[in-house]
Length: 145
Image (cartoon, rainbow, N blue to C red; front, side, top):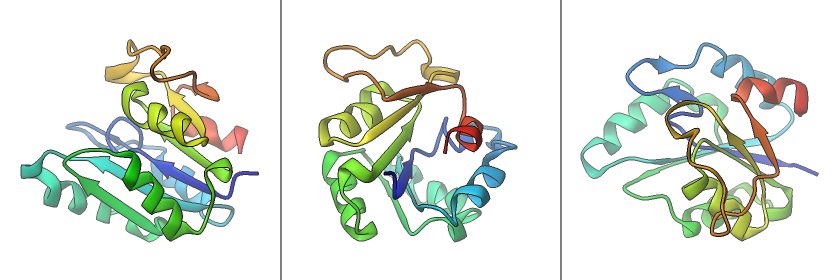
C-alpha cells in the first residue's frame, strides 16, 4: 500500500525553461490528503538556490524537499526516514530511468516512469530495472492512485 510519493522535479513537476506543468498543482492537491509527498531534485551546484526557489512555489505540498548536485540512493533513504515510510510503501515518480527509477527499483520501491519529454528515449535496461508502471505525465496519477 502506497503511503508516500517522492517526485523528481524537472521533467516531472516542472518543464525546463517553461515553468510548472499546468496540471502539477491539481495533481499535488489531489494527492496531498492521501499520501506523504516529497521532491528530490538534481541541481547543478550553481543553480541549487534557483531550484529551491522554483520548488518553493509548491512547497506547501511537500513534507521533504531535497535539491542537491546529485541524486543518490542515500537521499532517498533519508527522505523515507523523514517521511517515516518503508520502501515497499513508497512510490518514486521520475522521467529518468538512469536516476530515480534505477534508485527506486534498487531500494524496493514502486516506480512510475514518465515516458515523455527529453528522456523518453532512455529505456529501462538490466541496470535500471523495469518501472512498476509507465505513464505519460503525473496527470495519469489522478486515475491510478
